[in-house]
Length: 186
Image (cartoon, rainbow, N blue to C red):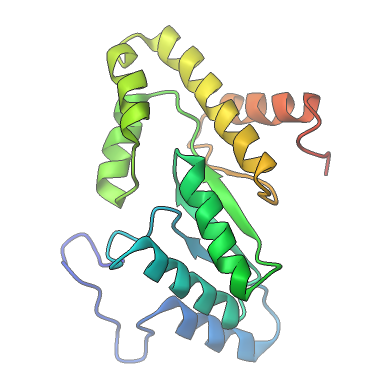
């Protein structure tokens, strides 16, 4: 992604224009395992989500062992991305990036900056309660837990939880999923 003061990314003279080029260079060393970025809704600069998922497959071709997604809030694009990538890479591991929904205003602001999509149904659920901290956290954690359950049921190999210095919510997610036998102890 380009720096905040630039519209487009320009690689340095000895740099890489695309992630798959960097992954190929890392693989020549032989000492590293790599994960790469994945975007269920498609990268904001990609012509389409499917085009971006093809680029994700290129990253697996270049040696990435797993992909970790940007935050997202609708399981359907993740399922579609996973199916798309597994056509070329049947063992592709794409780990969903989850942000616990405990402050909708912060998440909305963050998503506007990074290009992540907030579904209309989510906006309709959270905008009316955004200023009620207790209701926001309760409803947000229910929403987050259901998203995690749906993703694990769809074949997600695990979850990458963006804790954002709010570890008690991450702990609550992990403990709940373990109690439901959806996550194994590791």
